Amino acid sequence: MDKKSNVVKSVTQEGQTLTVELFGALNINNADELTDALAGKLEGTQTLILEMKNLTYLTSAGIRVLVIIIQALSAHDGEVIARHVNEDTMGVLELVNLHKLITIE
Image 1 (cartoon, rainbow, N blue to C red):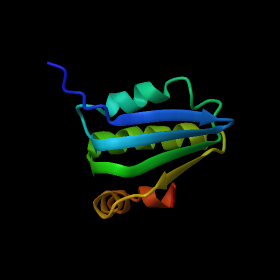
Image 2: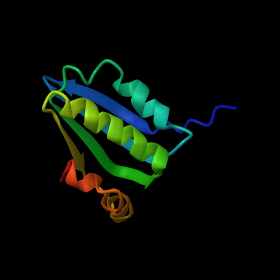
Image 3: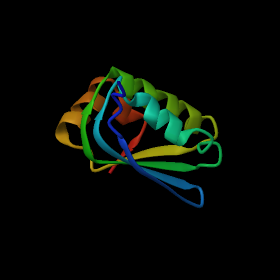
Image 4: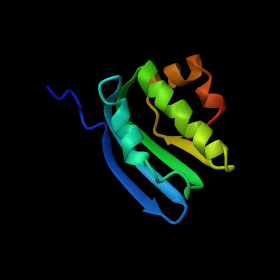
């Protein structure tokens, strides 16, 4: 049974900026979907924008993927921007100090 929930709603690239719109819960059942959506795209990306207005839940599996993304972009002085982060997701980002490693808009 496929438990993926299509957490990645869209991925768009404009120059060196990659925008990923997230939807629903980013958890163990679908964290690899985000990894797969970004495969081969981070190397040429200077700025990754994570549109989180429709992200409702973030688990440790989602945090793991975010850390991997942050590390990959940091390796070539790139940045991660999280936009429209809801209160619950912001609480999780603050709890694990990811809010110090990314820009919150």
